[in-house]
Length: 400
Image (cartoon, rainbow, N blue to C red; front, side, top):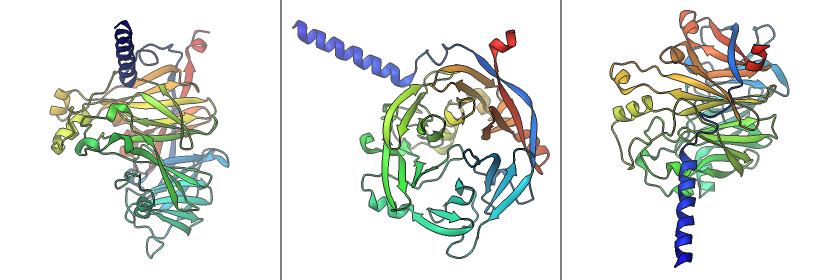
């Protein structure tokens, strides 16, 4: 009898510990040594042409190994890649891609691109649901996602649409992409759902991996927040890949498709994120939008290879009463962590100014500094892209 009681007690304690770990903990969230903050050091601006609109720039990229002083961005409207010098803030060249013919790409704001090198680029063609690999501006290879679905019978792959907050990555002969899972209206066996996909672009083979966290095993998480997966690479730390989910404070470490563990990195501004409701069922669009606007989420990461610091971005949600009044601009925070994911600071950009003033998705790191795009200045002057430069200021230095 004592053995049975002891076994039940241990099972209860393990279950409790597991549940508390899944959702939230004080350490590395509200309890941390605040060592640094972000200090504004001024503005940088890059001149753009008439065909460049902010909504058609899916991401900004720096090639750390080959061109660390060049800034690349893809204009999905004009189907061109623009290259700027970070030494002079001037345009040095652009690469145009065809819009017509079998090898062309129809302009669409949901297209996405990433460079493998300065002469090789992958473009995701949203219309064809295919990755197109260009050498220069000539098509070298095309990979259809519809064909990959047939080849990998274990893959649950809805229509993939890249988020502006996440990138697909190129590493050796592989493409790594995130998959959005809309669980609000699906009753699916959680054990077989994978949130990432590795594509071998030389053999046209695919492997799915990264199972959903226990957090998403039940509940309606809203169509807008959904179960977004964010993928980023830290080239300065053993080429480890990191994944996180919109409502999950943990960051998951992977070596290719093999899990290495997870690290907790939370915000001081909110605790656990709750689903819209406990049952998975369809909800009106307005209800989902309201949930997304009034619920915090982790939405983006940046890594600076010089300082070896991680920046984790999270939204500060609107209060329901503000949402009802039409005040739908949230704030955001930037969590700062060292290379072991120990939290050392968190900068808060208050609502509604934060999101009105900045567009975090266009941020990038260079030479130990973080650059945030200034939405307000772009709205005043559509001929330039403005970035505010922030440096890490350690509090010890402040005291000396």
